[in-house]
Length: 412
Image (cartoon, rainbow, N blue to C red; front, side, top):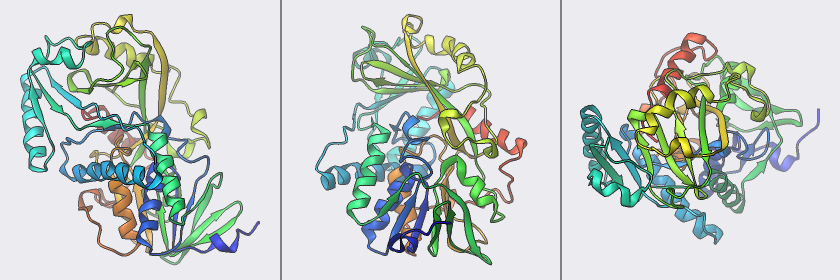
């Protein structure tokens, strides 16, 4: 076995996973000046779930614990732009939550009341005001719309790379093409990780490896309560009705969301029955991952009629791209953040239920504080890794619970 350079083989914190969460944690930890941090990524940085995300930075949330995490991401973007001296091209186009039934109108009012308490800027719009903002949107089915003018979206790969560059500026060591094979334990405490290039030692380890996190944690005796569930979206070619910039939309009755994409339209559809994979079958490269043979056509066929009520031009749109990949979902739609029970020094940052980009800043700041033995600035109690009790993440019945969480998701 090769021996890593002594300058990186011993650290104060090792982060397993170089997606946006691991890179955000690295930057926040390095800024604290509490010690040496090393990030180990099995492939290239931000090349897995991060680069496949739609990256809607939705501030209005039905789960209040998420709101400050997203707010921190917006603050991080401003700080990163200042630190790096460049724009990250945050597209602050606003967002529209639409309701087309009495039930969802009531849900929107509850969402507005909750988020107003947390200082989220919101406006009520009538259906007649919508075409000026979103020309392709047919307003007739809409009863009310909730507008969040400060919402935006961003290129997730670009944001992740900004975290990486800024972390390096602060002295973090980032290593890619460095797959972690196992966690090293001394009785009930983590002491490092093993790679093909040798062992790396640290008293604190953060697992931020997305769908692969469950595989590494399983050997410690703890089952991470999440499963890799298929996320998917389509990108349509430019069309005269689609302006280059307009608010992104969240349409629960269509189980859909949309946002602009380089003159075209990106739209995501959530199938009535989501699909997951056993983490033990994950390939090294997500480009080789298959959720089946339908390539999303079944979901597109199932959801097209629902979305067409709001987007009558849908049959005219030429589909340019289909993007799919695993998002780690939990049964209750909340993240897995915090200390693994009964394994001293092991911290978890996964199970982000399709909101990892939006919450990346808050997750990074909170996990960095935990790793430095500081009090996190946000309440992480709702995200406790052990809140479901003992879990087998490879069990098909448990994975179905996670699939149902995605099927029932109505946020961006």
